Length: 227
Image (cartoon, rainbow, N blue to C red; front, side, top):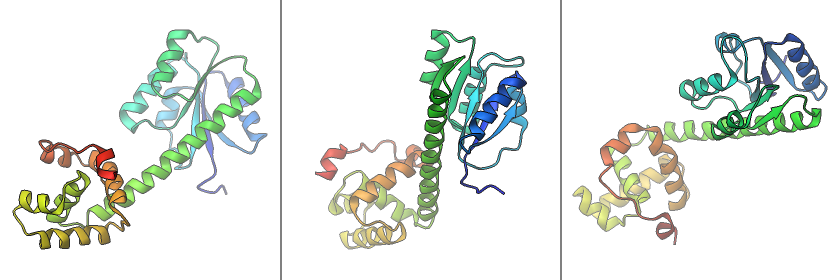
């Protein structure tokens, strides 16, 4: 039984022989692969939660690899990193794929090592994405423990406001601001204002209400805050 951290590569190509050849190549370096003959097969499959990437052909019956890339971006928040491998590519296709975040756009026939290098980069990207998601989830869980006032103080601190300014904006005393600020640092497990700023930069985009509620307040330049 494979570890949950073992990489898994998904190969989508309408040619079963290509799928088999790619699976054998990946197996030769200890990487498990699953194959699909169409984008629909992949989208309807139950995909294990493991790091990995996709190897996609560009032109397939029932939908192109580029269409699948766009669908994954819109529905799955970018999804897995993609390595395009095709015998029918052109410059506009490659430009579109790379602009949308593809790892590489390779033309058949391709050297085994070139493909393996691209797959390795795709897996590494996905590991970084998964790690970032874990950090975000942990920060959001801690943020959920803050009171509304503590969240507001955290926001003002992240914007570079001094305690006196925060007290004036919120209509409370500086002593109360310091109390809320201390609670924020403790509950969020933060060791410095720099950590608070970076945490806020991760949290704010993930909570739409924060941007809507506090949009009128301008942000201080980050270089001034950290100076």
